[in-house]
Image (cartoon, rainbow, N blue to C red; front, side, top):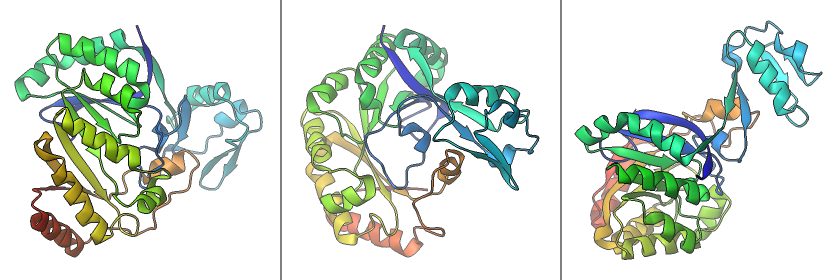
Length: 303
């Protein structure tokens, strides 16, 4: 059995595909989206988040930190460059308020499938299933493939949420055990895409065309972030590209930027890249809707 590295299982999810679902958050991503809501999933491997708002400044962790944690007025300061995982595990064990939270669990495909099948009745009744997200689930393609195969053998539909930056031979094999693809299109302009994610979008756009040609059912997702990927001409090109994919595209969701991931950056000792007060105005969303109507692409606006 293949072994994977995951963060959490989100039960009773209704945002990551049809019906009631369980979303599996896989660790590791090959994009660096400025607005990422799950920064703890970017880098592979186990890590710890520290939530200052939970900390009561009791100093229990400092007794076990080998000099790598100091106490400040608003909580602990962690020397993340030097502190090791064993030390952070000790801090987690002694913290009375669970301010230290581990991210990352190794699990086999068989063990994961067993957990996911516990909610099979909910999937069946609601027309739901399981969604593999991340991070980038495609980076653990063999593990996801094997787990998906076990689930589908039991009649559970499987969805892949992907940014599409995966070699086609790997992605095409994985898609053999996938029923629906949630596909992120962040920009058509390569320079805008590089600014937002750190990588080119050429493979992503090429793979979108190939998925549509199979054809494999797709839901396209477009996150809109002011001052990052809100150029109206580029948005128009995105809708035109989506329309060119043809009938494989079953739904298009426009996702307005939110700050739900901001606190996670601070808990990892990272700076949050998006300026304070950034918000998608109603006027901007109205313009986006007008462009979609003009191009002929029905959209759903998601908060």
